[in-house]
Amino acid sequence: GAVVSQHPSRVICKSGTSVKIECRSLDFQATTMFWYRQFPKQSLMLMATSNEGSKATYEQGVEKDKFLINHASLTLSTLTVTSAHPEDSSFYICSAGAVPGTSGGWDTQYFGPGTRLTVL
Amino acid sequence: AQTVTQSQPEMSVQEAETVTLSCTYDTSESDYYLFWYKQPPSRQMILVIRQEAYKQQNATENRFSVNFQKAAKSFSLKISDSQLGDAAMYFCAYRKYGNKLVFGAGTILRVKS
Image (cartoon, rainbow over all chains, first blue to last red):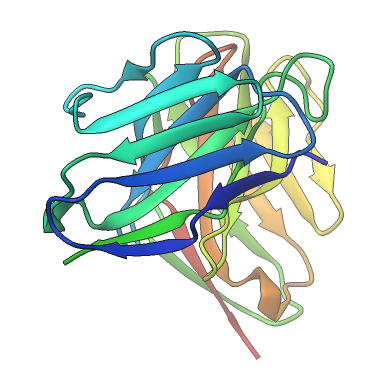
């Protein structure tokens, strides 16, 4: 149980285009989802926290107009990188926190497999 | 602010041997969770083990166990009978109830055959 999927697994796009990444909790409901960015051999950097049905909370230094997050349902959150540039190239990982009473309990986060974004 | 420190950037272990990865954290809270996550070359983050701070008993998951020292704010991970598949980056993480995870910098574990 507690499986999180992410799509696409990798994407290459041209500079100036927008890219959408989907994150789904497959077998549990997630009231809260998290989006991370990770550079090679480094730790995960939290970008934003999204709660179902409300606006995302962005970490300091993260441009909310560039990284649009939508959490429309208890099983789906999306991250859209708008007007992507080469410096946005990175590995993006989503994570979902389980609803109380479901697999793993509220305070356990389960992670998607990540999306490698390359902006040319 | 809470911080998590993993002082070992890299560790090596011989196959079938035991290795311990260190983690210390700083918090003024009394109730919280601690986690170890594994990130293999596929980069999929996998939950290895979790510990609730109010529980005195150390968590165990098969070959993985922790040494949780609450007063010392220490949370080390012991891997017994190391296998080649254990090679990965290991992250220690802290979470206050309902709050975001705070990760350490990670420890790269290499397993030698």
